[in-house]
Image (cartoon, rainbow, N blue to C red; front, side, top):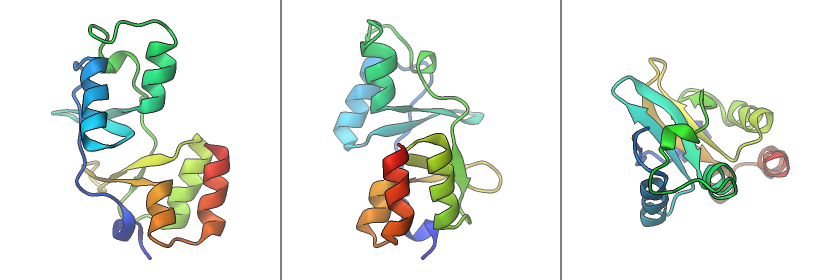
Length: 135
């Protein structure tokens, strides 16, 4: 099974100048835990529900005025679309994340892969279990 066979391709993105409230609303509406942060130049970073909790709420930031770019993870960990699932798992373990953006060779966003994708879509548990423990 290849990474492109299990990744999510209908990816919601957000602007770096959007507010944290807008990011939280978008995550809630689309039932996702991560949004790639993009502009015309491409992918700048990612913002996760964990970023919102730890870098915004826990620090007492104003969700109505603080921008996504102020708490996003940049540069974002990623894999290229022709990577193997094993390679994606290694990147996840190394970066202690449960979700990765998937880019083309020319660095265009094409998807997101998560540990949940791996678990639901039948990837060998010997690969996904260590990722879940590390993240």
